[in-house]
Image 1: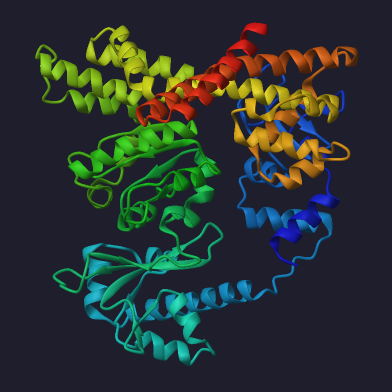
Image 2: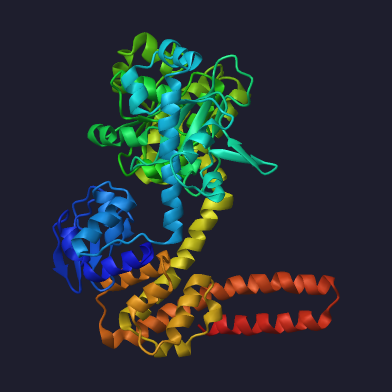
Length: 568
């Protein structure tokens, strides 16, 4: 039984309602249950649980999912932990016997052997010990907690692993710890300080190797290559050690490097993580939302560090994160601050500033508001930042902050924002409006369980391909069944939305034909105009190509559509 089969078996044995009721007080409302959303603050219940499809959705904040999503988000657990927890509750025995899982187990075993080997090697190498204990001033406990080691290189690790078990060539290379050249395998890491990388469950999934000072062997940092286990965009250094402290403090500090994290930990600041030497990815930020939505960004005091803050803002604001920052000055990085003035971190955390305001302040440095060129640049920059903010309350807050900081009236930014959004966001808004009408029609079909009416419509007037495909599928069903639809269109957000919307309807069944017909005719009328515009373009091309017959056929179709418009 693989994970997918395990999941389906657990879902078939557990009911979502009692699981949600552990966290939310629910009351019956028709065929559903409603309550106050556990994911955002509200006074009027907008959180709906549907027993028929075994899913939940909040119409206030948009959160939705099944029992696995609910437990994962409300109890801040990893998926594997949720799987094990619900399997135990459902009485399902998890079996991991596939060759895929066996390969994973072998790689984990290789990684564990390597970490232990590297840790012992560190204690026997004078240069490595000097760097760790004297230069970096890491304590023995911190070194042990983070399993810091040293790689001599050559074939030392390979020879050691061969004494610990039977591993195939494929398994060794899949771990990322070895490389092959002309049929010969050797250790990947050569004369490097080694930092094991853990996933959130504490399993070692990869390694980072740093050169010793004055070394000329390759780049400063060398990571395990991307493997089935090691994906840099989905991992954060120190998160396994920090996750409990992040939950307790409801704050996650993000710094730039592995040594920053370790220095902070040994000085008592343990709610801290770092990306793995690359620009932050949204997947990494999503990972952090399991533990806290409050992020304090402490970047190095150089141009690269400050530029990184903009990326954090544009990615983090999409996830509705609360983003803060502060300066490390006069120190270059967090590691230096921790070594020279570790008590200052308390003050930095206490006096953290919202990231948007700090970005604007830093943009104003060396700028003259009375200089026209600088004035335009400031408006453009602030408007760019604001264009990423979709939440209305956050947008208003940032807009007011921008006016206070720059002394430029906020109307200028809002006008500039329209300019920034016109080519993309406004177009998306129009598409969303059309989409909502088509999705509403789908919801009506589901509510009335009406298949026959679909024989009266022409699907070509539906511009959303997903909805058109779902309607075509329903038309061929003998009986409309939501569970079958969900299974067929797995993870389709439009279908999920339509099902929940239909569960909220309270429409007189005698008015069924009126609702369906009026909605369909509105969709048809609006979308015909767009089809006509597309045909006009094709007609122009046909005329330019001197294809008279094709142009006449297109004109005939345009006249037919215009006649349909006039009739309605």
